[in-house]
Length: 384
Image (tube, rainbow, N blue to C red; front, side, top):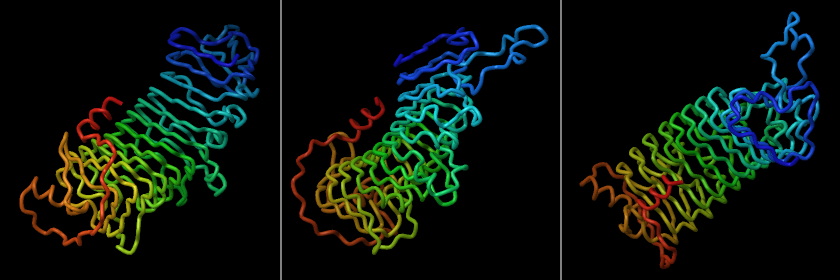
């Protein structure tokens, strides 16, 4: 058997009611959805004494789908757990050999789990490429690092992860907390999408880097004040698409951190930035860093009424020649900071206390890409 799906089986308690162990040597895809009475994971068979209490069969003892005293799923590549209240995994039930080849993990609609991936599971998920966590009402942390105390464990944790999708997690506060000033390296992560996580206060700690991240999409995370620390922003050398929207508390994308103009943050491959519906956004960064965007040719700034300048330091954008602010409306005043300043003045009238910023003298080629306006982008984003 290579694939097994158990869907909406409200009265099923086990795959097989006997006490024999089961082995699934070729199973690659396991999906268990809304089967609340099925106990998927267990470490051992219930003993005779546990099953028979004072001569009576204890009907509360359930036979699990897979016993981990055998290597139950040696070739499992994709696991989906959806609305199953009895599948919480304890450390003593989880030998590392059980799902060591897992590539895709979907955790959906769980009400009680506080952590999507507890630290003891990290030791076996060395091949995990995609993590999808959605509609889990109690999850406060995605990755737990408390037990990873040595450098080698941190280096190996989720090293092959390429895509993370986190949707509708109302209690999520951190993807992972700072731990001994080290975090998972995420050296192969390419896509990070975080939507509708209203309690998120920190995307990642300053120790986390994203050397291969190509798409960062953060929407409706109302407790975020800034998106990235400068140390993480400097690692985004492969980033191509940055989308931030629907978050009323965000004041800046990159936290200021006292940066100086002599310190450069280069987004070498960033082509598209969308800043949409950010009621308190004042700038991309309040620090004095010099930002370079050699590939940027599409910028949307829509419904950001408090944005006075793009950044307090210099920003070089040799390919950019317009800022889209509404449907079929765009502006350009020769450089990025001046354009944002004039948009703010048009919206609010005379501005007092503006910093004097030097204009950038740049020759701009004609923009050849098709522009998606802010409102159309917003509609597309909301529709998934």
